[in-house]
Image (cartoon, rainbow, N blue to C red; front, side, top):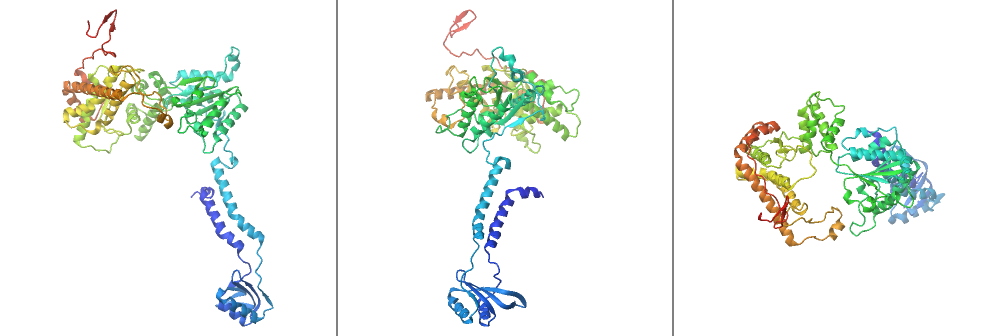
Amino acid sequence: MNFKKIFTGPLFWILLAVVLLLVVVPLLFSSSGAGQRVDTNVGMELIEEGQVKEARVDDGDSRVDLTLTEPYEEDGREVGESVHFHFSAARAETVAQTIADADLEGYTDEPEQSNWLLSMLGFMIPFLLIALLFIWLLTRMSGGGSRVMQFGKSKAKMFDKDMPQVTFADVAGAEEAVEELHEIKEFLSEPEKFQRLGAKIPKGVLLYGPPGTGKTLLAKAVAGEAGGSFYSISGSDFVEMFVGVGASRVRDLFKQAKENAPAIIFVDEIDAVGRQRGAGVGGGNDEREQTLNQLLVEMDGFDANTNIIVIAATNRPDVLDPALLRPGRFDRQIPVEAPDFAGRKAILAVHAKGKPMVDDLDLESVARKTPGFTGADLANVLNEAALLTARSNADLIDDRAIDEAIDRVMAGPQKRTRLMKDHERRVTAYHEGGHALVAAALNYSAPVTKITILPRGRALGYTMVVPEDDKYSTTRNELLDQISYAMGGRVAEEIVFHDPSTGAANDIQKATDTARKMVTDYGMSAKVGSVKLGSGDTNPFLGKEMATGKEYSEALAAIVDSEVRAIIDEAHDEAYWALTENRHVLDRLAEELLRVETLGAKEIAEIFRDVKKRPKREVWESSPGRPIVVTSQTVDQDGQ
């Protein structure tokens, strides 16, 4: 048992306070020298028999204190020469008359004077205990006894040379960001190099991008390379329940940085404090806005900071206040995106250091299998592979462990204990086979690299379609093929079983989302045209959303719904054509999946060798009826 934790916890002090209130305070007010209590009749007999020398009557407490001529014995036990008894109001006159008849020499009816110091102490003890408990709670809230009531002090952590260092050599897949931040280091170490050309040191650098792309790692690398003062704090550390605390912490943070200049201040998740002002319900000047106002002033106010650079990271740059993003505050905004193929290969090489692997393990093939993975995902893949290797009591990480780790990161752990009935396995096999066959029969789909009907995560199976190269834009034909591929599983169930299941719910959702974006965002609908429908601002503030009205009419909304439905129906028809024309391939694929449960790229290519391809679509026209320019000739809609 951890006695130190018990004695330093709140329960011990609360129990101690209760004991003091219930035990110590009554003892302070207890009468000293009152002796043993006896029955009223016994006390009266002692007075009448002349065994009492002195008597003191306290009418307020209805008590009589007696001093006896000889020790009193009760049940063979000597009690002492002092006893007392209490009397009721009805016997008060009888007791007074008995004492008067005894004609005692030491008789008084004046009450015993209480000690005023003890009375004051007893009155003050409860308030003192409450005050001590309140101070203890404040101490815990403030982070220790040395910081009592110091809410306005900055919570930033200062990095020094003794702490573990991360350098730019530990960062891979973000060469452009590293180059920009390397220049920031030079600004601080050699400012005269830039000042002689009239260049001003940037006030701030904003790193933005999806989660897991390495924004915080880049800031740690700057801390390791800079060699000067580096302060790290989270955006949420500024905001407290007490108004004005956040602004005070901002002032204290910049004060510390000025005293230790040149310095770098890193604010992680700055969107917690830098969200756009005046967007909440009521538009009040709340604590967060006061903190943001102070941050704006410190970064570029009348008091110009020298040799202090603020680096911030966020994955929501769209919600930041415009005043925070203007030149003079965050002069540079550096995107940190998911790495490309070369970046993924470099990241895998960094995280593979110190991990024993088989000689024929090719990190390049792993990089090709993981398009869209961030640096954190790739680190997780290698870590999962190491865990799986250790679980199997092996010494080297091999391709099998890597493939299983990729599947775990993408779809979750395999559910080996989930036993499906034969019919459900058959439905899953045809469903996944439908996805894969439609992708193989279309002209703008990525190749299928893996199919499995083993339950994993929330899916009963999945089909992996991996593009051969990194893509940064998507054409209309590719989007249509993606929708057809998504509908392939549902269509296969309709063709084979004539009774579709709920397994296609996620596929339908993805297909519908893609089709709606084609119509409302990408301008890929002839009826709607190249028009952006809806606001491009994804501001998560209730106040702004309530104030923003609908930006298009109900008639246009009906057209949008009709166009989305038309795209889905066309994709359904294409998937139906691909599966009916290649029904023999679908049956062979499903039977093979039921036999081995998982197929790799080579087995899939062998089965799909005789797949009949879908004819290419006709030229799409964004504005039907208008002339189309073809080379140097102009033709109308009918080709005349």
